[in-house]
Length: 80
Image 1 (cartoon, one colour):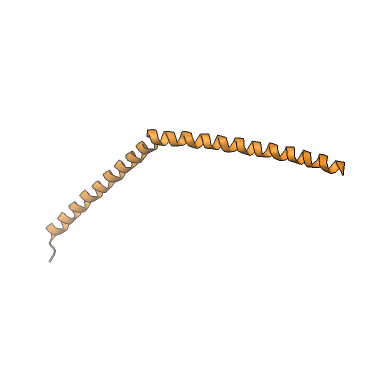
Image 2 (cartoon, helix red, strand yellow):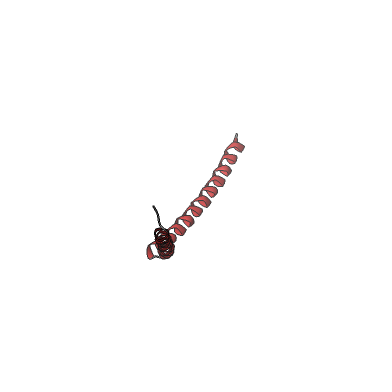
């Protein structure tokens, strides 16, 4: 049979475990925050921005090439 002492001991153990869980969650949050500001993450963000800029330039070049080709096609069609 479970006594009042057993119940109190289990309640206290439960409180301690809840506190440990809260502390672990807090530490996990801190570790994640540090990870986002690590030199590796900063380097990856920089590389990502460079890739975005390269993509934007490539898109602009493609649009310009399309315009040039359209003009060339119109000129050729005018000859016929």
